[in-house]
Length: 437
Image (tube, rainbow, N blue to C red; front, side):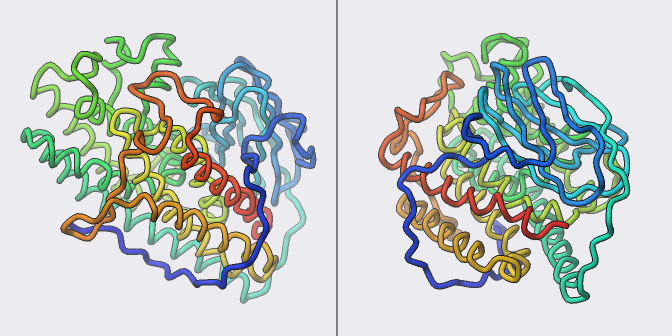
């Protein structure tokens, strides 16, 4: 079985004797009264509104400070003029919290919108005008380094999507043949290819932004919350496709109402997963156009990639909400970290040139997270893939799409992970502001 081989060799820096607090706030999801208020643009959201002020500003680097005054987790998106392509986004902004989003926007017309519970129709869709700003001159060396970062990261995304196609087919072949134990073993390994590039993959779509991610990786908790129905409601299950639909059939107890009634149903969802994965492949490899034309990454995609991946860990993996039936969250956790290392590795020299202390902090905190993950390894399979413990054995987790655990209920191991991830997320959140212009 062909597995991940990193395209970028990350430099190894000497560990620093940094004194870090044992418990750190998630920098992507601060309490409103702790926000620094230094964002250029203010975004105020609720369950039924999404207000951006000012709605016109010059091109270049910009920071949005987003406050959620609603009752639901929410997502802030910046869309291209066609309202289909996501230019940048910040997910999972909790009620009563503030998050920041730093990106770079060219001159043009954009739209902003929010999505309560990260699914469903846009709320508060409004035009955003970016006027011509001052041109920022960069040296030939810096431009060459930026171009290299984009080229290398694009290659990495393509590599992972290519491996995802093969791994998904192998997984679904086992699943539809009735080899349940093999399918269970392959499930977390195949998914790692997607998890390494998830924020990039979910920014693109065929007909509209995020449609492929919705088809491939939708969680029933989000779908049921949007429909205001129970997770195992037949109406919710009827529209649910992708990895987690198969996960529920494989790992949930039959009495819980997630199992398929027939092999024909299993083949249908497996075929759809392969079809949607091939769509992602065709898009990334330029065989088809997406919602905004050809697949193309920008420096902002690379600069925010690592931070976005660690946000995935902080907001869904720590509480066991991602793999709520299989509890294979540690595989996803590791894949997110690997993807973050590659994304950051491509802009590391740019960060070192601008802020060497920031670069050292990031390297140090990557090492801390990887050390904790290594402690949870449970051997290797015949192909040399690292195996991880059932996350439910070491953490308080969300089970069977039920209520998510509170951070006050975390186990010691879980709290160590949370602290380490937050300590890494904080400096990674500054990368975009450091390298974009």
